[in-house]
Length: 311
Image (cartoon, rainbow, N blue to C red; front, side, top):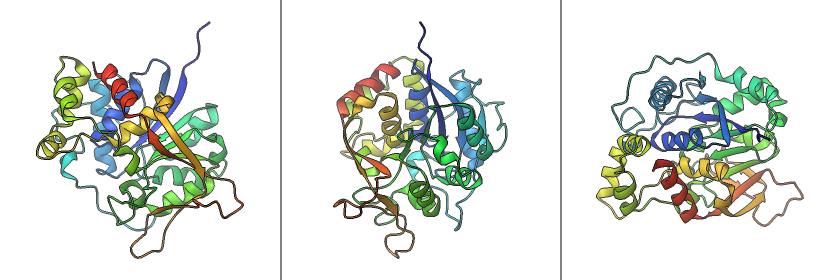
């Protein structure tokens, strides 16, 4: 008897680490990616759509539908991500084949429809949460269609060691209102924080050995990561692919060594702390937890898994 594949929708702002995350998801034999929805963030939403289209064409997965989502945050305008490791186009200015793939329409109604039609579907968000916040605002029942534990985000800084604001991680900081809506409306989301992803870098030796392999996926990943690799070459750091860590915990849950279900909030008003993800660590309130905070991951299992896929 054939076991049906598990289903997933990916929401992405299409940076370098998003690319590896999508590669992992598209090459897992037990998972089916129903659609990819795009959002602004690392780049504009139009560029994100273009990046995803080029990636799908390169991977010969043009069967997967692509949808265009939000072009800006809910309230205040934010500048696009300008980190040099992503290059000017989000994919490290890599030369990839042009693609004829276009968005099939608006991401927001499609998100609702996909979860209405597909029970036990996972939602994996790799960028700002604007698309999801718009979907749940348009259809309040969307929060119940995504089952508890089936909503994973790469975002937040559970220790408030921010990489965007002083205490906030980039994806949450881009649209704190959207993140706050998601934290308050969904029964339980799983959060892979910025700090946790930093504990799972690819060592330089791994980059030299694995990304130099003569395989399509290794070559593609190296091509997209060239500018990031040039940055770590001048430092003692490894290659941190934040979104890939988050995706790997969905595809291979044994990577998660420790997590805690807590009551979580997104700070909206602090002058220095806007966008911070804050938690009731002492469990002072008699309230059911709404966020499963991943505390620790098995770096070796993660690296071995990525090595297997790319090799």
